[in-house]
Length: 319
Image (cartoon, rainbow, N blue to C red):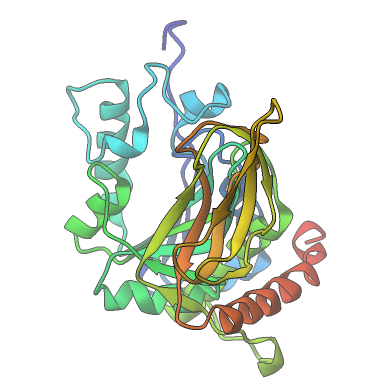
């Protein structure tokens, strides 16, 4: 680095006594997304890992320069998650991406990458997978997250690199940058353990309470409702809520009192992301909506899942 300190990346490796899959879980590709980092910290504390079958690779913070700066970006303002698979002769981010892919990603058979929403734009806990990836879909359902979205990969992302290497992978999104949301952390820990059970890396639960099982909402399309004009934004719907065509989601008002404009849903679905900014410009993203044929049913499933998570937070902080 500029102060001649070496750039390091902490990698934990847990090896089971018996052969099995090699699961890599990573967080901190964006340095201000903390929920995933905390989920991995709690995962490493679990005594259950003593019964591991196969290998577990845990990388709590991939992008240390951004993490130290509490920033999404690298020091040169580049997004590390647009630089994969990287280059050993490229920029700082390109070299970091290349090293991570060759030394860590190249060792795994399955992967989960943990993310959060942007600053002031929280995400409902959700999984994103590539379309027609049956192995990833099985992992996603095992994660037991409220919503699974089948979406195309973006150029330069870790998910694109994993797909190119035919490594089944999940991208987990929950909470928002710069904040620690304990429900999102809990979803991450429970989901990782559940995925490892589905891969036979951990023993199955002795007693399964079927009343606590919730169905996952699967969507293959999402869209953003954007601000029709600049002004003061007042949301009227929150995360996990059902919306129908034409329903008013919020209001953008002229701060000088010359009128206001309603933000209406163009499609039916459930809200999986929303803006918390009070002042917005025309075109700003306000509500991220996952399309579903039965929004009311999807909302009930999401509420049921969230209720169980909130009732079981303490155990992961008391060991």
